[in-house]
Image 1 (cartoon, rainbow, N blue to C red):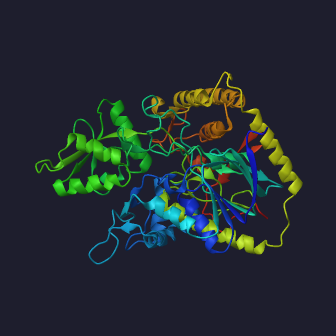
Image 2 (image 1 turned 90 degrees about the vertical axis):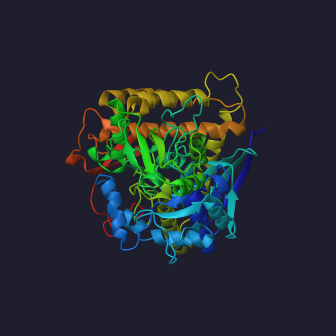
Image 3 (image 1 turned 120 degrees about the horizontal axis):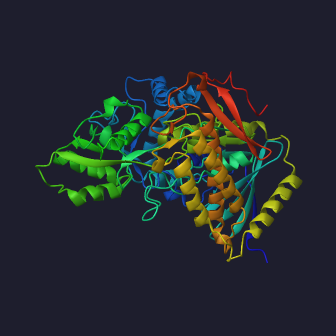
Length: 570
């Protein structure tokens, strides 16, 4: 008897991931009249990076500024290594995404003249606790979106370098889905859980990035032959101690200063890019001048406003403040917050690691578009940038579908053969309770390896050629062991999928880190053998799997445009 049911679906478009970008892409394509299948391994009302809400839209082009200003800011923050064409194309759509959210019902703070209340020139303040439910409602109400929730996508099937089907597993009812389509939009998250978390025993999921983002889209893309880029530009977040809440509301909204235990404002000694701010706190602590703190001058009314602001995205931080502070104390004039740095993540929304795409967000696999955290090359996109990329991808996918109505059909025998092979493989993982290893064992082993040898927080984000070689050897052994892991029943298969995805991303990340022989983003990682920026490394480090082995590719750093882009689809 089969351990799971089989369900076959034919759709015009498949959207993989029901987060910020996925909900927008699904709603747009449905409004164009296409049938859409949206696959999400959680519930779209509270999934992805915006599950708990946010209190500001961090990508916005303020009054007196141009889209090019935002693109240049992001390029500068990346120390010159980002795709300007991608940054500009999303920057041109940022403000429209704010209006889109407002039309959905999002509360955006306004000035007396009706203009948006800004927090710096590239942010607007919002009440964003309900931002994800609003995006989910837009997808649900669009009419032609078939939503598969609690369903983990884990394999993208291709025929002659063309995406033809997605295989996904619903763990609530043990259904294995084969979903065929002409167009696929990958809108999954980046990769968390490949490094040891800050609180591995008491609160392993108390991280900054969504702990269920296992790099599924990146791994599926690699397995299918897609090209990935800039994984080595890891993201290390500077966050509030214990709660891991964002610090931007204090730094930008309240003018908070980074100070050490001696009361010294040390930021100017290190620089003000994102990676330099992380480096500053790490260096001050190493020099025994920690703990490092954010100090914000605030009267009673301002403190209450900050507390309310954090309730929109990280209530635990507000509760922590209230443990030590009487909100009605009129004498207190300062908010103190201890700083902490996170474990490293692969994240195409804050940094540039993800699938390699062109200006229309087409990947190097025909029929596969990418938007949001899974799309590489365009850092600092945040929520509105993810929405912009989803809109770009949906529009181009719609145009592609219109033009390919009478195009060649996929080889049905190939699809059925690949699906049968996957089905048999999954069955082999189920039912042996006495297997020597489980997914938790290997997860913890991966954490230890990456933390110690591949520049985790325990190694102060430092690594060397020798340590990376050690990491590569040990992770390759984990990959072999992962194929021997068994699960007691079909409902536990998604844990195994996530483990394999994280190991795949960890292997590729190590190769990228080793290849970039310089230290370009010192707060995100310091290559001890190559401690400075090297102009000869001003290239994009890309890779793809060829015959089961990762091939490293150097792409020139230049101003890409539609005319300069060499399409992999031709």
